[in-house]
Each structure stands twice: as structure tokens, then as C-alpha cells.
Image (cartoon, rainbow, N blue to C red; front, top):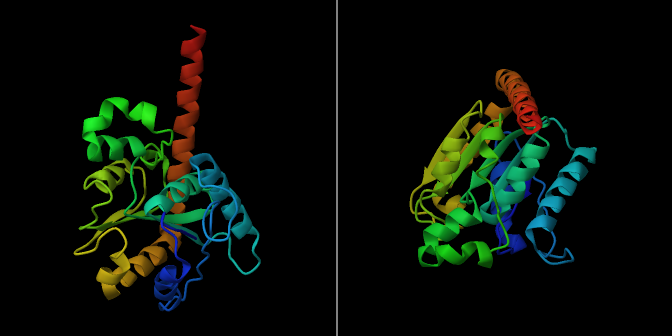
Length: 236
């Protein structure tokens, strides 16, 4: 599953299909337009984008040519938001998440890139684009890809997300020298393709899948106990 960047030009996405489909494992790639992009109707907004992300996953699960238990989600830049949220919502089936040059939250990016406007950000921005709060809730493997010359996101954002993904049974940070926000695929070369395909192979490994399932069950138990404690405190 490929959730694309903010500036959308379909032919430019063919590089990702080529790298994944032409790899030794010949991975299928499902590429989508959420509302407001490509030929999809409507206007892009955070609520709609997240609703679309879930609807897209549900549709992929129903596709007869796709194995619903061998799905890895890829989110690039803005696409990292629907990718992260959809992965969390369907974590029992999704086997891995790849995030490339995405952000932890709009608040973090705003306070870092627009520091002089920080006192007014809560009034200016209505979109949270909150990825970082979901990171500790992910048990499945997560690959973070960072273009070291990306000047459209903060330098520390992806690393903060990596640190928060401490419950993931397998996490990896891959840095691509000379790559900006959009050219990771180009500057990454064969190494980039190998990192992607090796990560997918790792996600499909029986031992990783069993560990992911066990970790997810543990997290669910902890969330249930935490909610019960909150209810008791409210009663008191």
C-alpha cells in the first residue's frame, strides 16, 4: 500500500512501483488517491484523508488478488499521516510500516520551522497531523527513511518518531545522503531498493509475526488496564 506525498503527479510514482515490483520478490503495489488528489473528488482535509485511509485498507482486504495477511504500508511525506493511522487501526493484519520523510505532528513542525509564530500556532492551524502519539502503540516492524538534505521537514522529526516507536518488535532508520524531500528513491539507488525489499521480507518472517502478535496483545492488555484505572480515578 502506497500513500503518496502532497504534490501529486502519477508518473513520478512509477519509480516506487518499479523498484518493488521488479525486485526479486516482485511485490504488488496498490497506489491510491485520497480525496482532493488525482481524479478523486472533494477537497483534501485531515478528517477526510484519515477516513479515506481506512476505506482504502478495507478495499484492499477485499481484493481477491491480494493476500490480506501480507500487507505492508508505505507513507511518503504527507502520506505518512494516513499510512500511520490506517496501520494502527488495522494492526492485526498489516505486517509492517514504512515512513519516508514524514512528520511527527504539525505542531512540532510549526514550532520548529515557524518558531517566531509559535504563540499563535494553535489559532492558525486546525490540522494536527499527529503521527508521533501513535508510534508507542505500534507493535509491528517500522522502517524510517530519511533524506539527509530534506529541507521541507525538521531534521529531528523522524528521529523523534523512531525513538517513540520503542514497542515495535523491529525498527530501522535508513538515511540517504544527498536526498531531499522527494529524491530518496533516486539517490538511494540499489541500496534503497534492497533496504525496502529486505524490510518487507523481515516483516513476513514467522518469528517476527509471532513476536508482533504477542507484543500487540500485551499492549492491548496494558491499554485496557490503563483505561480501567482512569475509570476508577474518575469514580473516586
